[in-house]
Amino acid sequence: MAEAPIFREECDSLGSVQVPADAYYGAQTARAIQNFPVSGKRPARAFIWSVAAIKYAAASVNSTLGLLEPELADAIAAAAEEVMEGRWDAHIVVDPFQAGAGTSHHMNVNEVIANRASLLLGAELGEYRIHPNDHVNQSQSTNDVIPTAIRLGALRRAGQLLAVVDDLSDALQQKAEEFDGVLKSARTHLQDAVPMRLGQEFSGYAASVRRDAERIRRTAGMLRRLGIGGTAAATGLNAPPSYAMKMVAALEDITGLELELSDNTFESMQSMADMAEFSGSLRILAMTLTRIANDLRLLSSGPMTGLNEIQLPAVQPGSSIMPGKVNPVMAEMVNMAMFHLMGCDAAIALAVQAGQLELNVMMPLIAYELFEMLDVAEGAIGVFTERCVRGIRANPQQARFWLERNPVIATVLSPLIGYEAVAALVQQAYSEGRPIAEIVREVAQAGRLHAHSDGRALSASEVEAAMHDLYMLTGGELPPAR
Image (cartoon, rainbow, N blue to C red; front, side, top):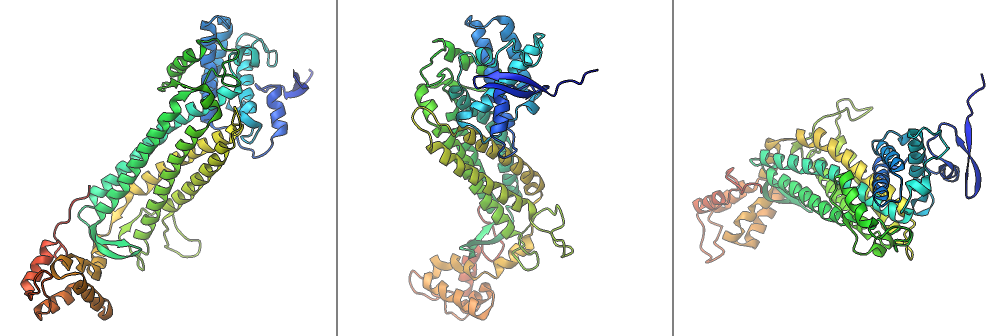
């Protein structure tokens, strides 16, 4: 029995090419594999999904407009749906660092759909009863498909990311409420400051993440404007006049996303500013989470020689040499992931400004970095919430210990005795190494504290009452976390 051939021969406009016999891709993809063996990375799942969704919609619209036989349209739609589901990802293989504008990725998807659709009609691989350009790519161009695909994929992934971001803000808010009774010393410039509640500190974290989520939702909304139908140079060449509007409606049905047709297809092809703005919102989230993770590391530092005001969940041993050591590994992971996001955003910024005339040929890089940001952010935030934030415990005794040794809490007496008098008390406490409460009571009992308003000597009972009223040294109430 003869062995099955390893390769089949296909032709494109440059000549003949050998393609693996069992590959669903064709000649242009085979050339791209040879030309771009750069990183060994594959296209993002969301990018494959979104290009396939466009092919599904185009087959339906072209059939409705009488441009494509129903039998061919149905086969293309069925094959495209399978690609959307991920069934043929092993055949969509072009490196993200490829020819400009994304033609190689686009043709990879076109060829896979064409071959799969041809198989569904009883043809063999490479026979192309359905042609990747004439049929799968009908009424389309790389130049309007790729920016549309980036928008669709980012919108889909944004919804998934926002679910985990909202979950994190909710978890932080739950901690704010749980820790509302923990009195502690605030710190500014990493130095002792006035009292606050640990719950108030965490409420700030929760609000920051909520605002970042709002920013992501707002910038994602700009991605809803599609330039599909613009074809090669946004003029709509080779696409019927009604094609673009019908494509938007079909894509809404297929993807479940709320979409609209761009009011200027030339801008939508020339400019990637919407992607840059969306990426920027992810960068801001990364900065917020870096700050919060750093704070958690500081607040949990020690535990015996650091602040130790909170305890992070112990999820793994922290040292290969020091037995019993436990590190804040989930916060460290978030730092690394967020640094990566910031780097991706910088690459997107460079790519966005590199557009020239009617097209930005750096779209493959924009797509890769944007989907990388969404994937890494969702994964990192999800595990950070579950394996760190939800398990944080407060150490109220340690927080109170530091607070009672913080001379700056005497700031609450400034309205009563004035800034300079309080500063003198604070300096005395620092120099003598004694608690500020002890110093204040001692000076008040000696009659050496005077009212700032009229200069009269204050009794010890007046000072105690002022301190009590200002909820400082008696364990009284602070305003609740908001």
